Length: 185
Image 1 (cartoon, helix red, strand yellow):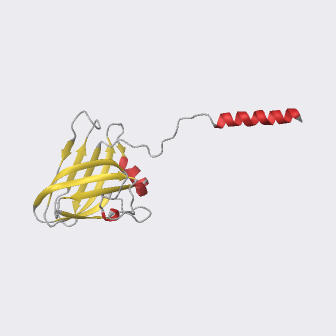
Image 2 (tube, helix red, strand yellow):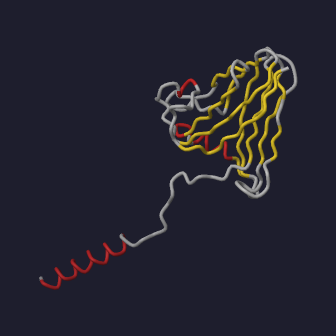
Image 3 (cartoon, one colour):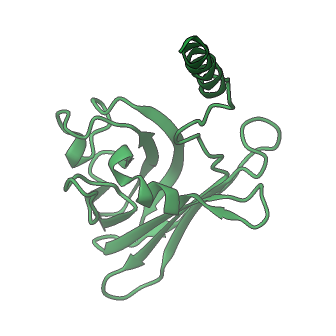
């Protein structure tokens, strides 16, 4: 009887030691490197596709990013589609897919100089909250200003104004923020 107890205690000690060993911790949702943001605007009726892009091949620091800015046509409505890439690896990694898979944890915010453009979200997560990979923009009259695109990780999508695209109360962490000179002609 005594040897059974000692065997049981020895087994319990070995099991605890085995299951409590430090292993490499798994980092959930480890932040991905985003080197490229491409925002493609296709006019609903007729006209030219407009592409805004930001490329920073080496990430923060080092080389300056390459920014391409487009010109919107006045009083025109566009369907927008955003794409995020990590072009520092081969093959190129499409980060947009990860944002789609974790839609509840992400939201794009678009801000424009006053009155230049109105925007609406045309996609949503499983909870009916906006994501912003897909959007609709309507350009106003001829003007010039700024367009800023921000991707937040873990925003509070229930906070005041967040579902309408106001980043002020969103919280969370900024995964990428890019500003473009925006011209409406």
